[in-house]
Image (cartoon, rainbow, N blue to C red; front, top):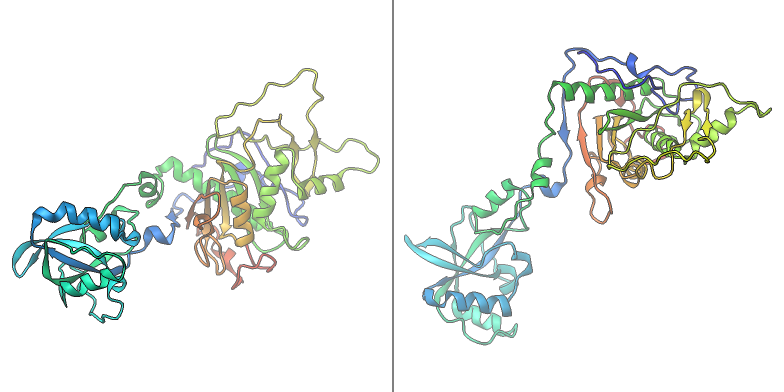
Length: 420
C-alpha cells in the first residue's frame, strides 16, 4: 500500500518516552499493501438492541362512529406515557372478520393480578377472558367513571413494543406488532454503518493508526500509542506513547491530549518536561523539528500576527517532550474539538473521559481490552447525562497492534499498570 506523504516532516511522538532517545518520523511509518481494513462502529445499546415487548390491554370498537370520541377521552383521562410511541387504534382480525382495536393501557396497569400468558409476538390479539365491565370498574377506581361507549363486551391483550424506536430496524419490529409513530433520525441511521472508505481514505486511516503503533513500540510503559489528527487537513496534531514507568497517570491518551494543550499554549506534563530540558545557564536550547499546530477544522480563521507583539514563544522538550510553537490567541478550537484520535488499544475510563472533556470528534482503536470504556466494560461516549458525545470505531489496524493486548487488565482502573 502506497502511503500518502505528510504535509511536513514531523515527530511521531510529540511527547516521547524518557527511554526513547530519538523519534521516528511520520514519513517512515509504513503498512503492508495487503493490510486488512476493519472498521466497526461502537454504538449505544439503545440503538442496536431489539426492542423489548410488553402486553397491552385492548378492546374491540364495535361502533366505529365512536372512535374519535373514545380516542379523545382516553388521551385526556387515561394518558399512557410509556406507550406514547404507539397509535391508539389499529385494524386486525377477530374471529376471521376485520375489526378495529383500541389501545387502553398496559395490562399490568389495569389488571395487575391477571396472570395472562404473554401474547404471541405476531400482532394478533388474544382474548383476555375478562368482560368490559371489569375494565369499567378498574377505571372507576382511577377516576374514569363515564362509560366507554362503543366498545365490545370482551377484552383482549396484544403484544406491543416497549420504548420508542430509534432506528428503522426497530421501527419495523415495533410496527409489526402495533402501529407506531416514528421520526427518522438521519444522523443515527448514518452511524449504524462505518463511514464510506475508498482506497485513499483507507490508506489515510491505516497510516495514522500505524503512527500510533510506532509510538506504542517505543513506549516506556505498556505498549500503547495515541495519535491525534485534524481530519480537515489530514495533519498530525500530537502523538504519544505510554510513560507510566515515570508517572502512573501518563497513559498514552492522556499524554497526547496534554501535547495538544501544549500546542495551544497550555499543557502540564509537556511544559514541565520542557522546563527540565532547559539548560540552567539560561542559554537557548538546541533547535529541533517543531510540529506546526493543525489548522482548526471548525472553520475559525487564524488571527493575523501583530507586528508589535513579541515573537511567539518556543519551548524545546528534547527527546522527552514536544517542540511547541504557541499559536496566536483564538487560532485553534478548544483542545481536540473536531479532531480524530487513533489509539492502539481501547482506552480506559480515565483516558476516555479525557477524550470526552477535550471534545474529540472521533476515536479509532485497534484492539479491545477488558475494562475498556469505549465498548467493552461500558460505552462512555454515549452515556446519558454527559455533555458531549463522539463517534467510536474499533478494529482499525488490529493486525498492526495485535501484540498490544498482551497482559491487559481485567478492570478499568486508571492506575492499573496495564490500563490503556
